Image (cartoon, rainbow, N blue to C red; front, side, top):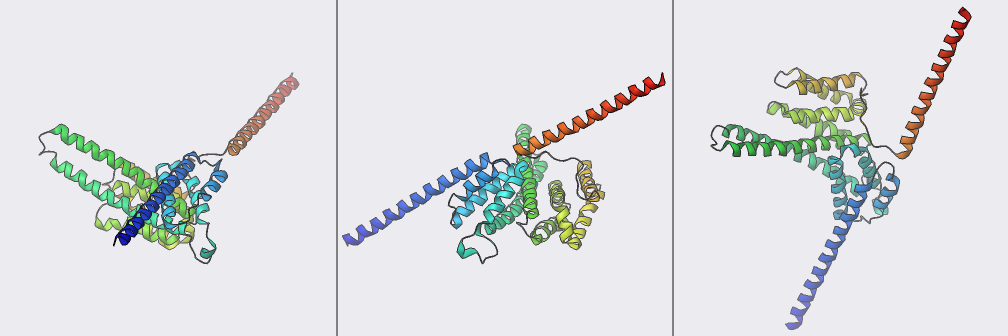
Length: 315
């Protein structure tokens, strides 16, 4: 009996040691991934993406951690969406010899699940916050302590602002992944676009939902229209019709109109958003601007000389 008890305790100790080792390993992995994500830029992308591949992300739990951390950084830092999308493309291309016959790598499968979870999660949060704001408005006349009620409203508005940023970041990053062929057309048309527009049947679309649809069209419009014009045309028509709804504020109606005009301009924005550049890009841009100024100066000098010559001949 004592031998069995000792063996059981030994087994429990070994299991606890393995759990501790696993916990330490995962904590180290998180730290290494975060260090890379905090430093990665278009300029050092090649070096740091190789470092990411060398982190021995070789099981489902580790892949889940990598996807979660990359997605989180991308949502909160939309200016680096392209960089994080490229990182997902590199990670998704890696397969073990046993996985070569599978259509999707473990990373790509985990990324797809993450996109679906995050999309429906922010939608659920929006419903809860709308409900909370409605309850606060109803209680406004009943609450004796107006200061306390105002504080609750401000807290709800702050949460709503954070949620809006996350919703837009999520939608835009999903669009970037689609443009890189990491998500299928079906995901965009059925799981995102159709779902958002069918919410009209439940009543008026919230401003945040309309902004998400606008952001999605702005991001994927060119590629989506070329790949599935029928589904795209139906979705875009429903979206465009929202612009004639007088219950929306002028900001939302102008946003819809801007998206319509963007399509009319073949999805080429009037104003190019500033994006991170490599040092080489900066040098090339500087050289191009310098060359343009030299050409302009040379043209101005020729014109000035011709004017002087003309005046001299006149006299």
